[in-house]
Length: 161
Figure 1 (spheres, one colour):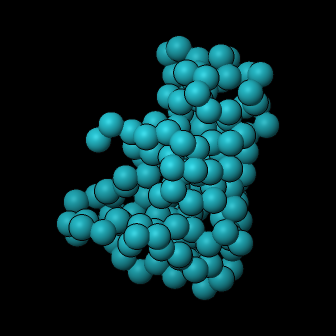
Figure 2: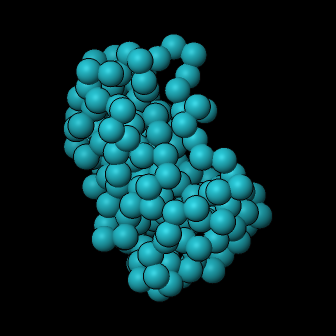
């Protein structure tokens, strides 16, 4: 289990109502094995990549509980996601505490329904753009770490909705 920031030391931000992590506590961290040169053998590999590097829930469940204290999250853990700021499919570090945060539900969430995370669709879109050669890995990583709600616009890519 990775140590988490001290209780109450992290503060959520919001953009358009969507939750964003505290950039001091959760600035993002990269997996050094994923580079522009290794895309075809890592995140763009056919058959998947993330399942082989994802930490087990026995580790992340304990970290998630500790991270809720850091962020002062008091909602249902069932409705929050212990999220990689820079997702594994974008080359984020699997278990560096600088890359993980308890992401609260987005606006319009129905309590008890589990996480509703529109960030996931942004991550998948960026992953596709990287693997299709439309976006450089480092640019996508920087954009998602800065503000996932604006990452697509910053990169000049749009998603069919």
